[in-house]
Figure: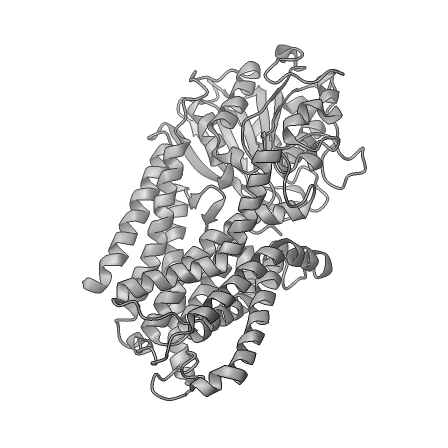
Length: 596
């Protein structure tokens, strides 16, 4: 029972958090949330989540809105917008865009599946055909503009968030066709005051706060003057309405912004009034986010508890072994290496990934661009410090009596030995631990239609077309954590701090700081620049800025892997179980959300 406590606590947190998130998302039963799968162009599978408020029927049709996420996101990331629209009586369809989440790639479709979703929702008998709108964040904004211009007769209102219209006419590779003053639908823009991508969306401006001076905003507003925030232009009843708003948010921050969500709700209220009138700031998404975070933490604790239980059960208990005795690393050597690692992680975050993106790109075996750049980035850093470690061993380590045994490379705690049967058991422990967490999440996801997530940081089940991809990515990720654990526990081993709990906590924290502080410093520099100068510190346009935003995902990843790496080493006496488990877990967490 003692070995089951954490397992039970984790399970209870997952169930409590997921149930609470589900009840909030469904309005305590007032909103029916269902999975939707349709066939898009070329027969591609398109996945979506639909929210249908109670009382909606063919005799009492409701206005509807299709809500599209941005690049390297999924439908769940827009759930805050979806929930608040549904609470006000709108039918909501939140799709995974082409190549994202559960949707397959649709080649040469500028709407990325939104056009197909628009036609689907417009044909639903319980949707008012004259009141169907589109909302899109970032790339989703370009997608909804494209879909609206291709299906003008189906759309009443289009709102882009952290995005724009136009770009194709300027020869820009991204963007969308331009929305004219007589496009046939109302058009709104919500753009964060600190949005990093102003130069992508409003090419003639350097600061997001100045997007109201952009010709790319003035053109659809049919004005030569600076656009006034919050002012209604045109006639919303006739489909010529235009309005722009701004919240004090970054590009990704609008997902967690009450003011941004309220602004978008207000735009739709002018065009297609909500069946259920609520103050735009009457919002409950924050509680769902908190509940999802509880479930996220619970899932990690559940897997850690399962790991502890497995290591106490026959025959897998043979994996648990004492840690070979070894003197801790010199504090000066540890500090010097830690500083070098943090500096390398910070300085190479953007340039190394940009090099990998432009030089290596993707392949049939490794089709996920940012998974590839992450592997090259972290892999190169690990290999570089592995070289330093080897030099240190030849010059100093051997004289200290260091061996492969003391570095955690032996499957026997007493003598240097390499036993494939031991590795098979270690792999079994890792596989069962991750599989147990996966099955629990898959049940939660399918039964309650909620993920375990906070903000953009989520874990979701893998669709069928992602499983085959995962098999390829698990090899490099295991290799990265094999080296990382070797460096952390074989070379830079800390001293003993007394109790086992204290050792686990301090070693985990130290590993997390060394692995992630460099990324955190880059993000802090970027945010500091945005909030003080209005411009990003790294990158004015393109993928370099995106690399920094995606860096947010590395922080929880390293928090989780630091826990498992440390516990596995201290419980098994070697680096194998931790490397295997962290490689599997990272593959799942990365492959589940990366776009094709």
